Image 1 (cartoon, rainbow, N blue to C red):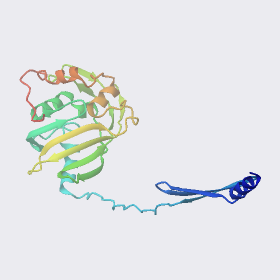
Image 2 (cartoon, rainbow, N blue to C red; image 1 turned 180 degrees about the vertical axis):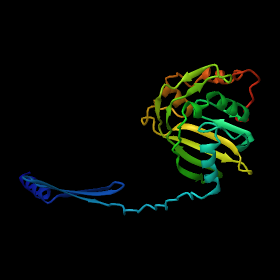
Image 3 (cartoon, helix red, strand yellow; image 1 turned 135 degrees about the vertical axis):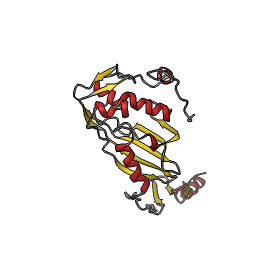
Image 4 (tube, rainbow, N blue to C red; image 1 turned 120 degrees about the vertical axis):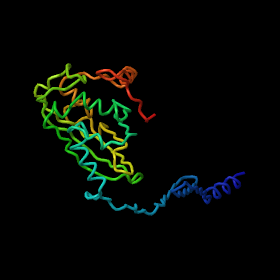
Length: 252
């Protein structure tokens, strides 16, 4: 029995166990040696690092300021829109649609009627869109995108009805608008087929409480405006100020 015990002790001192395993990106090896008096452990770790793949960065595409639709969009914005100046009725196609985050959709008749009512350019005689960032939509070559940041001083009166009886004085309020996204889609005759305005890019800039277009101006003057919802939608379908039927928009 004593000889068997010594033989087993000798075999245990020579015993070596190894274990290896793989992970998705790492390789580990573990080796253990044991004897009657000392147990030693060793481990080696090797990691396989995937090669760095450089990203393909496309070139920056700049819009051509001389592009005829960009030039036309700039002209309409500053001198024919009805918002920053009196409107040019012939600049809008007969199937024109207007959309904004609060007001719309409006067809041509309703849009021009709304411009006649508000008369923003009279309430703020020095109003400017300070437009920048004109570009052509890569998916729609007839669509021009751009940004505005409205500014001006409300020295006139804001209209709330077509008859001019309900007016709100501007009281010298200074407009410092937040950046807004606008777009214009032209038809084959370069008339405005679609106009979107007032989509705020950064609501923390300016003094319009994060609101764009006419709603931002109302806020600066101190005139409350209904929040988006059923009440506002219902109000838009009421007969326009001054009577007469309201037109039906082509937009869904």
